[in-house]
Every structure is written in C-alpha cells, then in structure tokens.
Image (tube, rainbow over all chains, first blue to last red; front, side):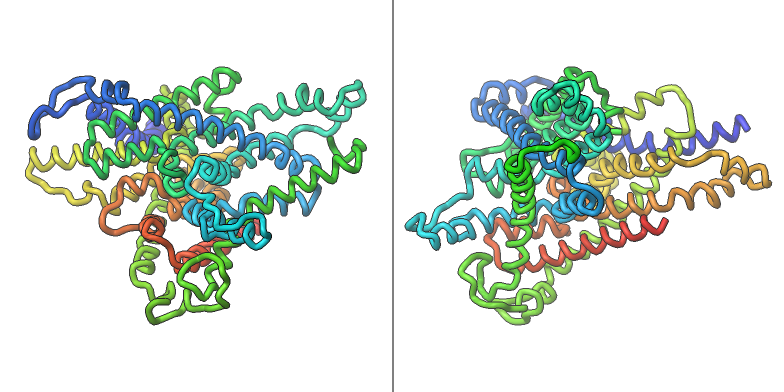
Length: 285
Length: 283
C-alpha cells in the first residue's frame, strides 16, 4: 500500500509540477532576467537596471502606470457601489423563480466575448451611434455628439466588463446571511444604515474582498476596453507593454513593464488581503 | 431591508427601479449588437435602412454574409480547435490536481496550493509575455545549442493553447475539487471491499460521480478559451482565433458582418450554457 500510494502521489504531482514550473514559474523568472539586461551591441547584452531606470525617468511611462492604477481602483469602487444594491436585491429581496432568473440574467452578458460587449458600447456611444441619434431626435442637441474615446466611456466599459465578477461573490455571501439576524438588528432598535454597517457589510466582507481583487486585476490587465473606448489621452499601461513587445520589438523594456504591472497587482492583492485579514486560499479557493 | 420588515412604498419603488435600470444597462450593448446585424446598411449604426438577412447569407459584395466570409469561418474553426485542446488538457490536469489536493498529504502541499491559485491573480497580458519570452529563449537555446529549429516554440497556435491552458487549469481544478470534496469516500472503500482494485474503484465509482463537474469545467474552459483575448494577443502567430480576427476588423472600421458574428456567438454560448444547466439538473 505504501509504495503504491507513493507512486500515485508522484503520478498526480507530475502534471501539476510541469504545469506550474514550465508555464508559470520559469517564464516569470526568465522575464525578470530579460528585464534586467541591456542591449549594448548586436546580440550583446549586459546586466543592468537600465530598463527600470528608463521606466522611472520617462514621465510618460510613470504617469501611465500611476494613472492605470488609480483608474483601476476607481473602476473597482464604482463596480462595487453599483453591484452591491443589485446583489442584495437578488440575494435577500427577490424570492424563488424570480431570484434564479435575475441571477441568471446577470450571468448572460458574460457568456459572450468581451469584444462583443465592447463593440456594443461603441455602437451606442459613437458619433453616429444610438445615443447621439436619440439626443438629436429628441431635439436636445443640434449636431452629432461624440461620446466615445474619452475616460468616461472607458470607465463605463470597464465597469460593465467586470460586473459579473463582483455580483457572483456578493450574491453568494449575502445569501448565507440569515434574515433573522437582520430582524434582530431591527428589534434591537437599529436603523437601516446602522444595520447595513454593523451586520450586512461585515458578513459580506469575504465576498467584497474577492470581488474587488478580481475586478481590480481585470481592470489593470485590460487591453481591449481602453484601446477601443478610451481616447488618445487615456493610455493604459497594457498598451505600453503591447507596443514595446509587438511594435517596437524592445522586449527588454517590455519585460520590465510587465514586471512592474505584476508587482503592482501582487502588491495590491497582498495589501487588500492583509488589511481585511483574509487569505488567498479562502477568497479564491 | 428585507421583505419581512416594512419599508415606505417610495423606497421600495426606487429600489426596484434601480435594479430594473441595472438590467437595462446589462442588456443594452448586447441588444444593439444583435439588432444592427439585420440593418440593410454598410455601417452598424442608425439610420435604420430596413431588415435584411444579407449579413448572414449574402453572397455578393458589398454585402458578404458570415457564412460566405472565408477568413471569419476559418478563424471560428481555429478558435474551436484551440478551445477543444485547452479544455481537454485543463480538465485532465485539473482532475489530477483535484485528487492530489483532496487525497494526499505531503510536504509543500500548502505552498503548491497557493502556487496553483496564482494564475488567477496574474494579469493575462503578463502571462502572455512571460510565456512568449521563455519560449523564445528556449527556441533560441535549442537552435544555438543543438541546431534544432522548433517551430512550435515560436508564436502560433501551440503557444496560444499553452498560454490559455496556463490559467484555465486553475479554474478547472477549483470546479472539480469542489465536487470531489462532497464525495463520500466510504463508497470507494465499499468497492475495494468488494474486490475491486484501486484504479477500478476510481474509474467505476469516483469518476462517474465527478462527471458533471468535469463536463461543467470542460464547457467553462471552452468558453473562456473561445473568448480569451489578452493572453492570446501576445502569443498569436499567423492563424488568428476569432477574437483576434474580429479585433483587427474592428480597428479598421466595422461592418454589420461583425454584428452577425457576434449574434451567432451569443446564440452559440447560450445554447452551450443551457445544455450544461440541463445536464446538471438531470444529475
């Protein structure tokens, strides 16, 4: 039995170890190494921090990095604010058939590709789009209005794209909150806001944390929405990575950018988990 | 604020109105994409020029429908192929992982579990470039050291499949492990008592129990692969999957063909979702 179980363990470990080492760990180490070298001649490299210095000294790079981080935080906060009342409604107020129907309706848009969703917003917002035509028809404006290619349009798209990843964990945690605890809160003289603050939000915290982490990650790493909906001013950090890799073919700088993005996202995930006393196993697994 | 506690009528109405508005927000982009697939015009925008099926079945310029548009049909095929490979691989590895973490205690188990979750918190584009960088290092190494030119390590379908597999496996593992946790191990012991070998017991008792989760993980993996954009963008070669083809078209300016493709995608994935739900109800 001992030898057999040991063999089983090794057989089961092999795919896991191959997957994690060949596709996750070694590629990231390699990316770090590439980001730490500087091209000094044709095919000649030396180890240096030049790429990271370039990142820190070129205002466009640093500015884009900070802007992407702040906008992602904003997108996460907006998603939470919009999703919370809806999730509460689905989990606590809607009953039976209605409840499952509403929940399913929340999932539907996410069975289709992000590209299709972005395309939908382009049709709605652009100069010849549905909203512009509607406003003209109603006589509110004289000529076509361009609503695409700015930060607001991008934010609408980002929030839309990540909504599901907030609604699902919120509904799941809120559903497990017993109604009688809320009733007890009212019996003890609590008001709506105080019950929300003292009972509902603390109970929903694991859901809030996991939703926020996923939404933040998705916004930070998004390429499609900022490219298609954002304007010239709303440059996203992923667009810089893409242009270094594919357009300029400067892999060293691109790898450094990739590493900065990875550091930022890991730091935020770690900080949020730390601040709220959650662990990665609990929120994701 | 729960049904058993009375609230003023105005508050309840405002709340319901907010929820209704939210669902309009969710539905609006998909609705316009679908509607403009039938507009008899060169552009997916107003004014409405009349109803047409041409963007699906049209055979002549300027209105070539989806079903006669070679590049799009080919990229749908590519996406389906990539999706199948990714789903098969990730369900297989996911099942192994589920058994490993559920049944075995070993050193570094906690560390490996956290590593297993990591791909979920790595931005897709970073996963893409790290695999791109490593595979090209490996390819150059093979070429310089051994004189082998390994085409599979250059950007192309193989890398796309590996890149998507690298994070979809985590999801497959979580889905399958959740079901395995509910399994009553005494059933397997009963099979052993009745004289079955270990593998026979797992094959005839445990795997059938896991089947719904494995099929669920397969469908989810397929859909995630089909619509993946970020990782694919960095690893794609000359055979582009559908999302990349559509992205290139969209950058050039769109015609309602894209609306037609999108509508077909929506129908396809809803059907897949319905099949999955029906299947899981049956079990």
